[in-house]
Length: 160
Image 1: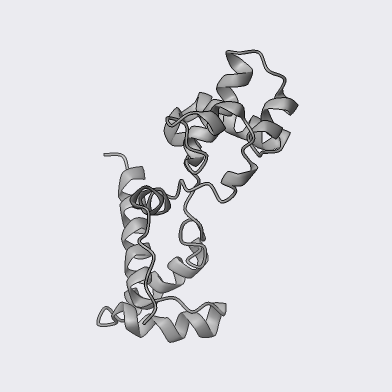
Image 2: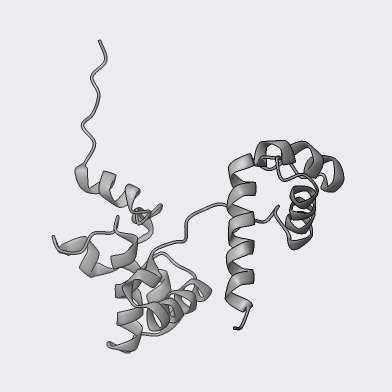
């Protein structure tokens, strides 16, 4: 029977937080190789130290980027994110689409028109008509959320 290797809890925590460095072996900085404190697997720590080496220690950008396994443009992105958002800015964004990219204003307007013509319709009843007209297939719950956001945005723009 094959034995499972026990997963390092820190690696698991870094992975869940989306901060596991995919290339810890590319970190050649001496501090990361000789200290128990610095961990090349921690992407946020690596990026922070790279930016700190340039801004505090005066190391050249190209040299610091290479020592931490990054390109010069990656350094500038990290420095800007750190300046703008602090440490949370160094955490990579979640993968995948941002926002309701299928539910455009035209799609939601048409959904509202269909609902106005027949108030008995439910979001699941709108899936096929929207797919036929706009060529997009959207889950009923997404339609419901999109219509709710649209209504809330409309209420927020009304002045009394």
